[in-house]
Length: 123
Image 1: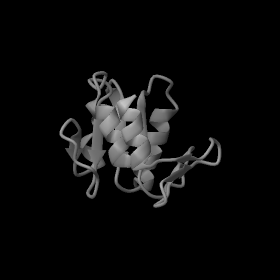
Image 2 (image 1 turned 120 degrees about the horizontal axis):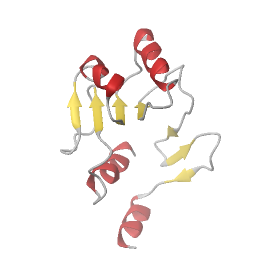
Image 3 (image 1 turned 90 degrees about the horizontal axis):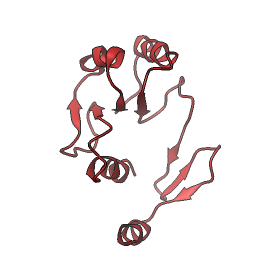
Image 4 (image 1 turned 90 degrees about the vertical axis):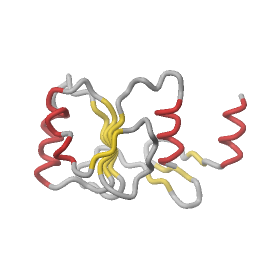
């Protein structure tokens, strides 16, 4: 599911924005995305950066969560942070099941299939 979503985010005509940064191992490797091994490599930019999408392969440490929480408290902070796995500080949780269903508990459940993706791409 993440691969498809990142493909949409980075492969469309409007994809020059936002900036997408992926941190950690085991994540998809689209060419248009920046790949880093540690969150510390992007933290200075989170403080003054123009925003983007940060995808973490695992939950940040307590200190990193505190830093992110401080940044999110500033209305000018314009990053979206996606964490694969459990994060106790997450405001929203979306579960992508092996059965193709996305469940959040606050939005209607959505089912993704290859056939749906092909049909939508052709529309």
